[in-house]
Image (cartoon, rainbow, N blue to C red; front, side, top):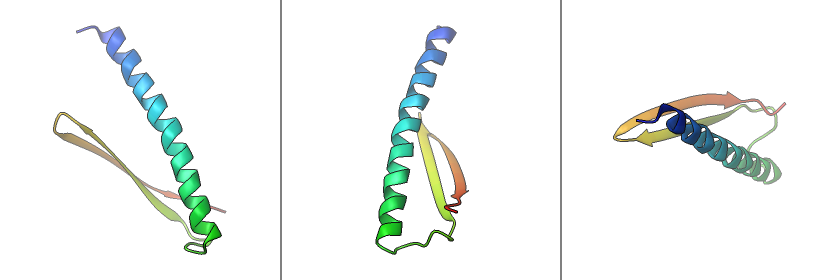
Length: 66
C-alpha cells in the first residue's frame, strides 16, 4: 500500500467534502432562518456520517447562529 498516495487521496476527499458540506449547511440554515423555521437564537444540531467498508464514523455537533 502506498501510504503517501492514500494520505493525499484522503486529504482530497476531506477537502471536497468539507467545502461542499459547508456550502450546503449555510444554504439550509439561511433558508430555515428566512422562512422562520428556526430563529437565530436557537442552536442547530448537525450530524455527519462517513461510511467506509461497512464501518460508520459519526460526528454530532451544535452550531450557534448568534
